Image 1 (tube, rainbow, N blue to C red):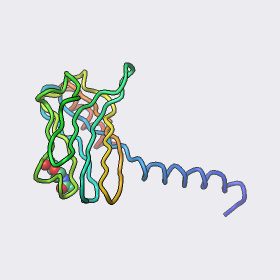
Image 2 (image 1 turned 30 degrees about the vertical axis):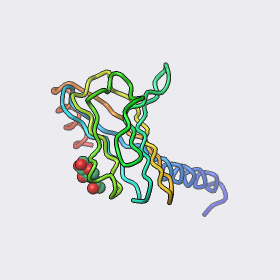
Image 3 (image 1 turned 90 degrees about the vertical axis):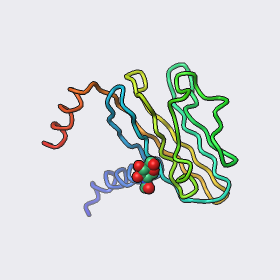
Image 4 (image 1 turned 60 degrees about the vertical axis):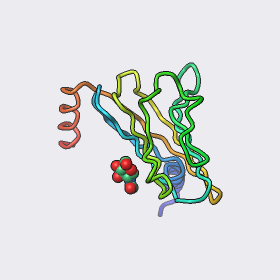
Length: 145
Ligand SMILES: *[C@@H]1O[C@H](CO)[C@@H](O)[C@H](O)[C@H]1NC(C)=O
């Protein structure tokens, strides 16, 4: 490896580590349909899950789970009755969130924080919402690349 290339490969390596530690998944959903925001973790004891969304006006709680059940007292108004976890799969390490009747205004970055006695994991899902026609167009565009 030439000496000049060294900083570049170091930089790529750091980017690689960063993306492993905090993975962002892009999800494309169709307006007015149901949408799943995927997130998996290593199963453990005392599972705590927080799905949150950061906006220009602050952080909105999208869905929380601890002490073995959903905890929705602090849930953001716009998400009432629209979110659910698969409660049977949570203990197996699946924190995938179902968001019903997705709207253009739901677009944005959703952060998921999970902790158990054994460890912690966090990640982001970048949700994009489109009308039906645009989604078909984007899918075609992606498969042609
Ligand atoms: C997690 O649960 C969701 C919804 O129940 C399911 O679609 C998905 O396949 C599951 N993921 C894994 C890795 O089991």
